[in-house]
Image 1: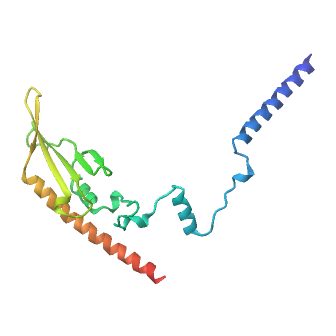
Image 2: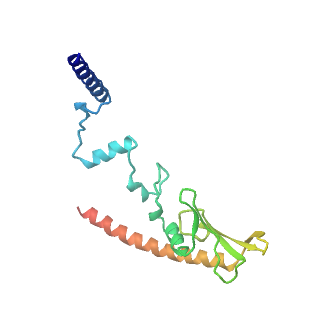
Image 3: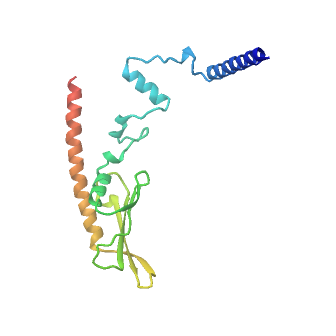
Length: 190
């Protein structure tokens, strides 16, 4: 009887092993055809990956032509970078690069406990132009009973922010162009 239990237990382990192995084998984990042949030519790999939708071309960032997709990143947009740097002292509540909007949280300088401001910057274009930004300042005034009134205000702060952002964006653009031109000239020599 003990021998029968021993044999039956061994058969169960053997069958379990076969089932597990067949399941793993059917998943493709142990298939020898899984080895990938990698082309030594990097340009071919990049082209193949782009065709399969597995990557992006950074060369498109510099193109402003109408054909194809124009990949833009927040780190390469001088207006975006300048705005974030100018508003870095404020807590941000919404930052959406694809939507082209930065919204700060309510901010109180500490001079008046019942007043706060919120700044919204909308990007209308990626170009460094005065009409490329729309800055909106909201003011919130709260009473002692905690009833608050929010109004859009037109103040000198909007203009000051716009000028500061544009100046900083011009500096970033010059730095970027200087750096890009150096890299571009080096690659032409090779």
